[in-house]
Length: 89
Image (cartoon, rainbow, N blue to C red; front, side):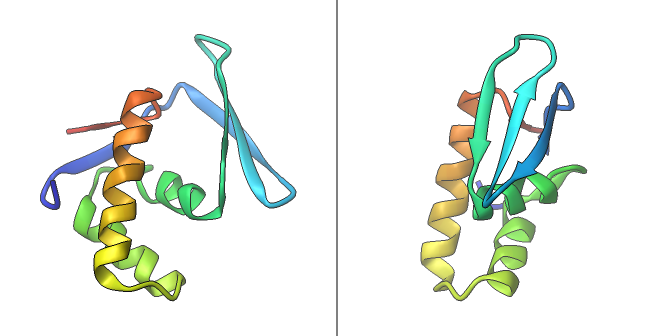
């Protein structure tokens, strides 16, 4: 999965509220709330980015071990896919 390119679905809009990012899908009306690290992933995939590029960005922003970071990014991207927030390209 590390070579796979990901991009977010542009049907979502949102705003930062306190320590999270709240979003709504303009087509379906579905709401989601992203935590800080998930928001970084969301912002990273505005344009197609590989899993590796996303992992590198998170490691630069957060003190996290490389394998834990990669595992968390991969899990988050799969959750985002399931919620139709993002898709591989």
